[in-house]
Length: 296
Length: 286
Image 1 (cartoon, rainbow over the protein chains, first blue to last red):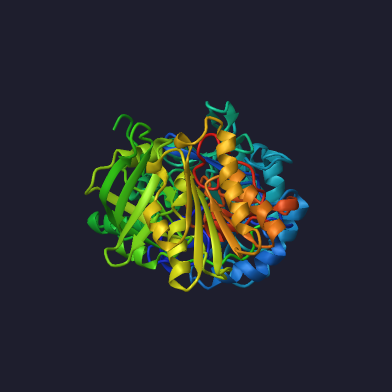
Image 2: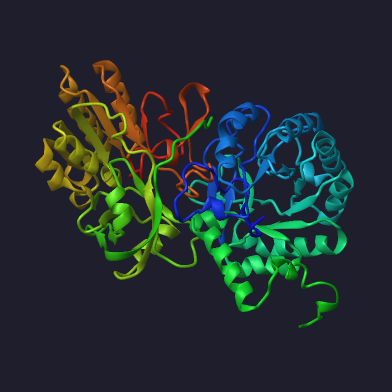
């Protein structure tokens, strides 16, 4: 990757490329999650604003894998950067089928397994079960040679336990974290703001949660980590690197300011120059081991 | 279902707030803001909208706005907004000279595949605003428009004089009409129905209330012309990234995204009810 900055799944799309969102300069592009069969997504209202964050209950509208491969993937392939396809599978069999087909496609560089969408009305959140997470990842592992990134949920007692399970299942990297489950109510109508009642909280509000989970998994699990959750500025991105992330995803910040990705990329380059750091990986995991000083 | 979506060519521009004040007397819940953002203003066409943020910090997300007018020469846009939440309250508190972060123009312009030479435009309250650029376009290209405008007070009949310079206007305000609000509303649609009788209209565009949108659909179905409705929705991004602004298709056929597949839809194709609005619904008429 030319830099460790990429959009989070579901917060970017390849329709047009204004100068302000320079896809070719991104470290990678990550697609909206694709499902095997087409699905419409959740009814309105799908988004609601909260303090320093937003709730979404999008429900993964998807054209299905066939149309994704014929119509959507080519638009990503032409960007000229690393393409990570986010996969939402409802069973290990489905996962194996999807990942197997994607693995045969030219121009797919990695798979991000979305184990953690909180907005699906049927089934369970895979990433809330170490057993199911491990099963899905090993099904994907057996079906392709591509790097597999497991995107985990913060809505668990121990994210480390899930991370270990996907490591054993054969994952190559972790993506931490998906949204936190939440809701909001309209006091005037006395109804839930979201059509799906609850949704996933993202944005600056969740950054400390995400950062802590990255830090914990860096300590306990031997997999590279992509940090996600409230990254809006280059300072946020650097915090994630210091906590142990090898790369970061920028999501909700793009909704507020479409130039957020560009600013994080440029800000990181300037920071490295100023600090005279040649390789950004020197920052990764700085806040661990001997460098970590209690109370510093 | 969201299929392959053509994108409009949008940009992000750091503009400047040139004017900003509340309009009308007594109610004070609608603001008028003039934003200078030349690149966006020059690219805007009827039907487009913009995402605007004139504050730092909270709230997190920008707000979708449909300008009443955009002027290529001055690079300015005139925006009317209803003060109803933290975003529009932040807008109301913005002083001239402040930065206005503008993303746009967004959505698909109406004039793509535009239909109709003799066009009826039906707007209520803030929902009047996106109709004026369309009215100007229709007249400039040799068509004719008749406008049916309603609002709570005269101050909220945005662009009334300009509509009047473009064609016949049937204007109506609640505080000058009968006590019975339903009777008042019936007049607006009755006038439209009367006008449409005998083939005088070959398309109608409506904005500002679901009730009016349903009336336009009914009248259009009986008189044989298509209706189109301008929608607004809660939006995360406005540019098609977040998939947060669906409008339901009739017959359970899935959804369209207001931001990139709209904001204008044929009234016969979408569900004319629900939480996605035909732009800032006024109280009492929904």
